[in-house]
Image 1 (spheres, helix red, strand yellow):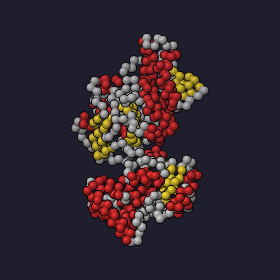
Image 2 (cartoon, one colour):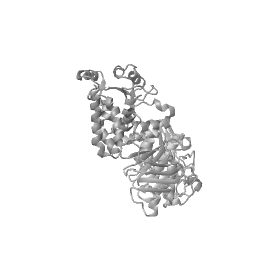
Image 3 (cartoon, one colour):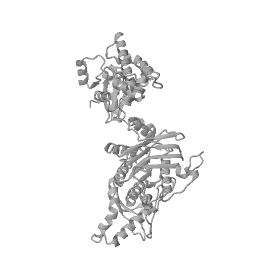
Image 4 (tube, rainbow, N blue to C red):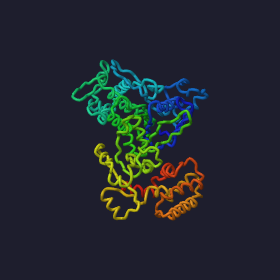
Length: 535
């Protein structure tokens, strides 16, 4: 199953939450945001909907499920979910629609002295709410041993040796562990009628008791074992894991998520709620390799006391900076981009200046989607950039290993020979006079008219641009000096399109209204991309 949209009304944290436009191809949905932002509440919404729709293990709790201050009208109206596929009508098929694990999965120790019948996993959910303790290792131990005994007497494996039969049931767990752990491997279940528990090989030690594993090792083993066992019956399911990274270091988090992504059944979907850097970095890597199969939902800084609509988040540098801010707090600023572009413009520390970091802010907006690992810094005039007068570029490359620096200047009135000399010196030069020439291109102004619903005004807007440039030329400015005409163009566009809240100055208008329109697919973007990145 694959979720298409969700709506939660007066439920827990949500006044009116809508999640939509989730693609049918999404195999992994990553909910991001700090503690307390509502991620677990969405899993509770899934759990309540599932119980109301014929799923096992749940209950109605007005103090828990209903948003404070609202009176309950109908349990069925709190949560609605649409799927890309038809909802199955049979009871057993409905039971497998969701499999949800809470963040409280600690099972420190267990030892068995008997075998117990555990029944179908579809009838034995471990939790009813996301606040419930979700200890599953000992139960999965019973399932694994029971499957081995059943296999022994079924006749299906009579041609196998004993060691080969054991591997049928333990081999999948060992295979996954080999991808996640460096020095930990499942040895076996021991004797379930005396000292039954999981035993491991760890480093040079053998017969290593489950209770002696670290918290992180137990947590990762628990999730792997559970998914491998449950996916046999939950083969067309929305799997949800709250904070899968609990107790794990960053590298282990990444390896675990990669293996979970591999293990999810073909027709299933995995949802995780996380704010850890290890999970997010691996999710970004999975997105880069499988862009149609990974979706991010950003719960950060949402006011759920008001109606909120969440859709798949664009992967931009701003998004990753926000994620790093949640995961690393003050250390987020120490995470370096792959490239830094030093460009013209008044530096950011010049307080109170309208054009401070103007070029850098525009470039960040324009390239944030495609070049999320690139940052832009305005460091001064053209000479400051060419000569790296403040030695910022050389300092960055010394301090931040792996970060490359690009120096970028406007064309201005440079001759072809001057441009050639600069490029030989490693300085890139815009093909137009300055950034304003791109932002106020005819193509971008036409897109603005279409965006505000006034395509009929395109001829008038372009005529106003041409007239403003003509007036600028009459003031002895160069014919390609769009910057000198920008103020008049801005005023005429506001008048013709009756714009409000588009920027109180021409600078703000260029930065906040026009720069977001320079997007992949436009000729202006393609030209600017070639100029900056030489691709």
